[in-house]
Image (cartoon, rainbow, N blue to C red; front, side, top):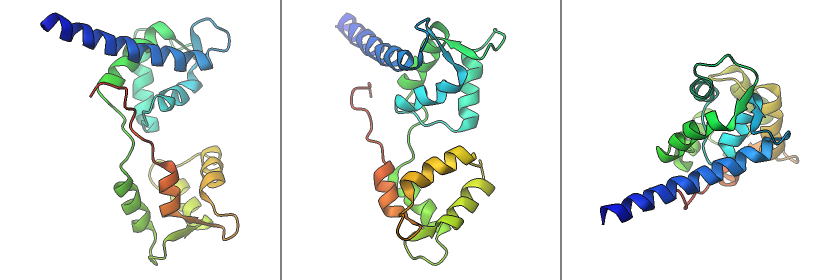
Amino acid sequence: MAEKEGNGEDGAVAEIEKKIIEAFEVFDHECNKTVDVREIGSIVRSLGCFPTEAELHELLAKVEEEEEPTGYIHLEKFLPVMTKVLLDRSYRPIPEDVLLHAFEALDENKCGYLTKDELVKYMTEEGEPFTEEEMEEMLSSALDPETNTVLYRDYISMMIVDEPEDLPQ
């Protein structure tokens, strides 16, 4: 019986590794099992993980351990690190109620929305600031073009990611 359980776990690891390889290959434009280091965040997020920029840099440091950074990440180095991240269920998305509470804290007038100017100020001047590109990307999906506001309950509903059901619990 213990053998069967072990095989099940091996199968789960193999499934996870397959998903990582598939995600990696999307960004492996040269088909040489390497990707530009700047693509790693997109790969990690496509696998349902949402690290902060600081956590992403820590992850990259683990991948590039004992190597001089070249600007490229090799699949053979990335695979074991990312497999552990997925098995440990690291970098989970923030729950909906926590996001709502955060937006409500910023909504001083308790009106259910933030203006574009308020949002830009909070996202670029507080905490871990957004880059201009990140801010434009957020506004393109969050901003109601008619009112120039972010109806944050609607935005949160749009952002919520369903937990991948096929990862081991």
